[in-house]
Length: 281
Image 1 (tube, helix red, strand yellow):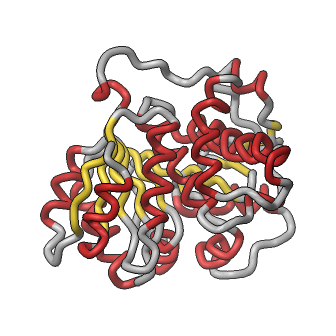
Image 2: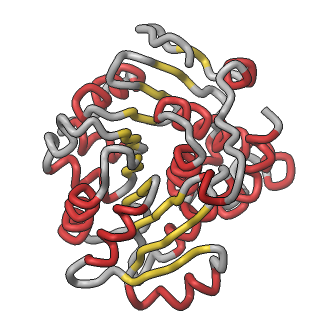
């Protein structure tokens, strides 16, 4: 792992080659179980994007916990995954979370009270070895309880966009997003990936410069969260997963631009580029 520094280190293919991802051997269990918790009646596709991105990034097993009315559709759309309904008592969710290697919470959720309840259920269930990726509404829930992660020693990656960063900071972010990523990392005791800037609580800082305007498309953030979850599943540490994830997300967009233009590709098309992008670093 590169040494943490107060100066951002630009993420290049050579930096990543010098920081190789774990290459677990054996069956699918060796590459980790990723549980994605999210979706709603109106936005079930966010879970699909995050979950399939996790598999493309190298996760071995995928489980989806979603709104009950979407279970059948997602079971068909993602035959590689176990799909379960979120229940009133969240007992099945707690068991799945306890057994998972990574839990990604937030994609597609649209009810802050439900999200807060799910976040508490997951945190109550997981052990210290379980990694967490918090995205979208899960970040809104966390902003209402900023000490929720304090002292847990959990491996956590937060993947806010600028609007979500504003909620986490309780103010508008300044122009220096690198500094704001660092502020968030220290405040929430988590690795933060913010608009190409990655920061750790210990002071590590990196910058991904390949991202272009086309990544600002519906569902793109769900893909990024899923990539990070998949990399954690295969054994990467949070900073490594965040850096490789930011690069894979951005360069996958670069690969699509010659076919669709800078702003014409879809998030689902990003997913299909992830495995090749990671494999050819």
